[in-house]
Length: 251
Image (cartoon, rainbow, N blue to C red; front, side, top):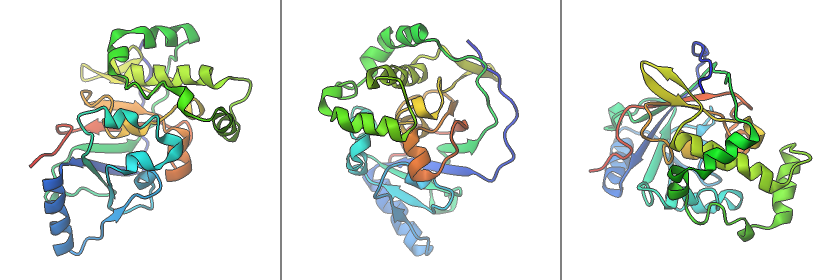
């Protein structure tokens, strides 16, 4: 099912993201220090560096466990080839500090022309590509306090729905970035897109930072409530994620 893609929004919003192993991280930090470039550290949530006001920021591996609300969703990171690696996010290209362009995030004017029905979401999560990719902890809802989940839904304005039903959208959205059914085509390449609005999306950072969907040259990703809350990204507005290099910059 193909959506409609319009031209990019004329916007100043842009972020560059790089995955590094420990050796390359040390090399990068030495270079940044020699060039008197400040490098902060994300302490509250992994998506905080996506804020327009954030400078060059390092996301340590342990940050993927720190945010209590996101601990279960971010189990995807620990079950991926990127587990234990370091993420650097910057408002500008870091070629001068020795890093090759890897992931670029830009504002987009994309509007989905087609979103799945509830039954189509169920079909998405029954496919082997999704079932074999998801970590065991992802759908272990018993590990979380039901009252906390209900409170979060109220804060996000989700009414008249059980968390289990909301979770169907969370799962289907990730599934669509593993084996796309809902996508647009650009230059003969599939560009999967988020299949719901912000209130119904979870852990968009997994798509922003290529924990999920690294094989696609471009993805169109709606921020989740956490990215809106912690990074100030606009509700229901797609971000174009362009991948220019391999998923990891090793030494």
